[in-house]
Length: 337
Image (cartoon, rainbow, N blue to C red; front, side, top):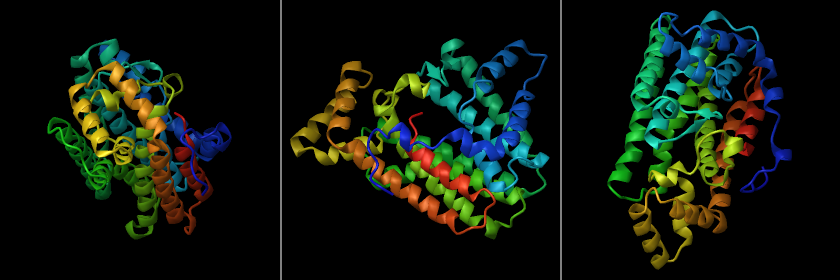
């Protein structure tokens, strides 16, 4: 794969609609399933569900379930249910993340906390988690509850690990950062692929390459997301950007920037970073440094290596949707949203 620029061109971006065409009917059933999660007796719950679940993102996690299953346009009821579960879990984490980041926009709509308030957002996020685990309990195969309960635990551990660094005013090593994003992002995508393959009919051993594909894809996805928080366009991303800097989250682009600075420059930036959290002028200054010192290009190259590893895991399989899984990996690297 050629070197990846800090601003991937639109020509390099695969057509996501074409990539997901083989699972479009399955995704339509997932949308119907998500819409059925509301309870008509509760007006506020219906409003929240329509606002949040109706604001479609890329539906990447349900798509991975269906693609890995090999039955994307003719999924079983259990596959639709599994795809619904992973989207409910993902959306719950987004609702809670937006509270922590004080974000105002998500998927081109006002966040739950911005449109209502933090109290309602917390409870609605909890409702989404509860709805997901209610569905999880109905699967006969115990691997579903075992894997997804572990993933949910990992996600919380990863977030707490990141917060620990912020409150401790400490700079993590790159190794620690990679371990953190493995917990908070990559294991979830790995689970989507693994469980999609298993519920689609494969054994756990046969599903192992799908799990490794999802894990490497998840690492690349989070690294790219951390870059887009710096260089992305808020209008195209459809969500509040720059929150990593304003909330003190230390991501790979910032760690790579520190490597480029002299000891004096590094000490000054580290001191200012903790002292000026939330300062818009400081955020702009850091964003300019990140883009100008090669940190973004370097970070994208690391993401590209994870994409290569993901592609390698799936390339040798006989996956019915192998071509789409390979193209999806390319999309996640070159995406601008």
